[in-house]
Length: 171
Image (tube, rainbow, N blue to C red; front, side):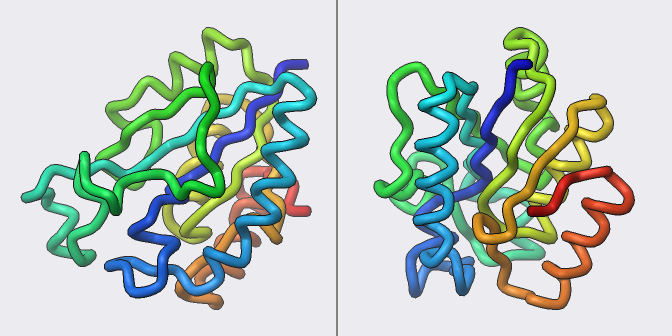
């Protein structure tokens, strides 16, 4: 069975203190994500990074402070989780990583049958990723120690929704 590890928005603008959308706890999940990366790489799993990359005048900035502007240091993957050659890095402009990206095509081409999802924010882009996987009949696994959010109540509700509605395994 082909598996994938999908790393969501582990970018400087979410992870570094003082960044526009700093997520408390994002630094603390890096070791858990590193462990998932080591496991996935050792098993020969597909590794995919989905990363916010906005235009400077993106409409999303009406709801959130400007962040992860394409090409800026804030839009870069944190160095602790740097991709290796051959790993897939996809830019996204919306919360849903399947919208207007090649994620669906990559997972289909690689015949992925199961995915582990890690990163930030639990109740936003992580949940959108799990929902998209569910719509494509790809079971998801979400390690609690490898996701973080700025709103603990929303994060807990999202984990429950991912389990109950989208059938994700929350571990």
